[in-house]
Image 1 (cartoon, rainbow, N blue to C red):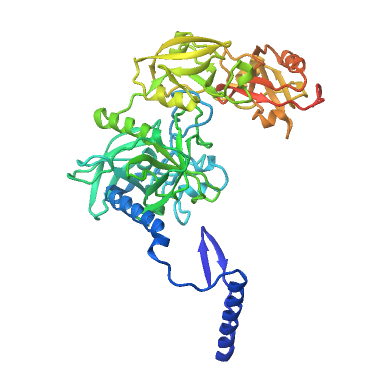
Image 2 (image 1 turned 135 degrees about the vertical axis):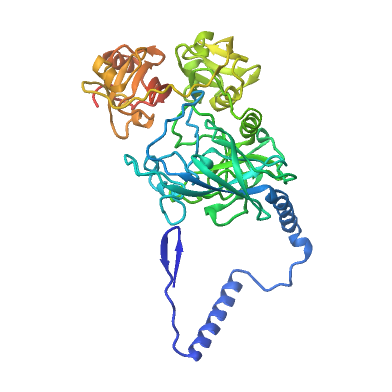
Length: 546
């Protein structure tokens, strides 16, 4: 006999006993052994448990059943037919820079997704092809190939948010759809039409021609705390429609480590409620049955649930859905900056007493932030008088601010408080520069384990660096070095050392060597089209050589 689990076959060998007498003896022996084990462990037979001993568990069951019964009628199955993509689409740029990446869409098996499985970490590829690993179930062609367009079919989930048929799901669920069918919990099937998509936040609204439908009330995701009970609904693997799983909020304000752009907002809810391919677009609800998130991706080495599922917070979802229902589109705010979170490691370099806020690592020329006078190295502490904990919070607030509105930023500049008013611009997805590989020629900074070279015209062209980027280009990073630990890689450009500009490879080496022994070093690094601060912990006793 064999049992198949996640594509792996585990053999269970039969244990054969030739005679009935032997079987009876075996059973008697097993009973005797089990009794001895039970007594040795202090386990003795007891009378059936009375109601009071299980009342807490029964009350929990009743509460979960009540929430599931309330929410399930508003959950839908979304079946999509789409044309296979012949070539990659354009990348979407993000509205604000942030401490970590934010996804446009997660690796959560949705039909017609624009993510190329070849670009994902090992084990993620199967997540795009559904059960059985067959292409055409929510996947694209292999990278570098342009096969003829073909019909693809995929399954996702959604949630009804108004009685007249508006449904919220993920953008990647319906991407490229030529036909959408929605199955309700009562098994009625409707053809759906697309109302609009917020590509930045991976939210879509579709509509069916129906009335007096059950809905889920909006909840407030800003009031979520780790440890709270949540339930996830959807159609895992496309086959198990209207499933519900229970878990807790594992964390809030989470990034997506596999985001395709570090400037996209996110602040995802992390949960251990089981989410699998096909759950994309399904609701995550709190203990009151209120919609607090939309399930969107998981982190897994196998492609199936591994205890870390992620949902888009309702704070973001509701804003996007309301705008789409009203106008058919979403207009996102834009400042034109990249940021790093303030951390215990970098706080001292900016004269900060606590690790809250975000450090401006880059200001885009001719952007709203640039026109308002925001500078590299400014520390953002407040927006409109509200304290800011990290860069993710700024991303969300700015992204949800209507273009043309003015916001007031409370900042620290060289340790001194100041206020800057910025008129928010409209997000533009067309700007993106990518740094690639570094060129030849080097100087060495052995303290941190990195080799650099001058940014010559050839290097600038090879790395596609904007004219304003000046510094020392990283040619090599020693494995296991402080530089590698800080995330430096060939092709990065070091702009500053301890907040002092770097003009050349030799000036970089000089600044590193002059840094106090035993002290951390703050680098401003240009990588992947944006600048960010990195704290490096130098190796003791090294000041030259690799």
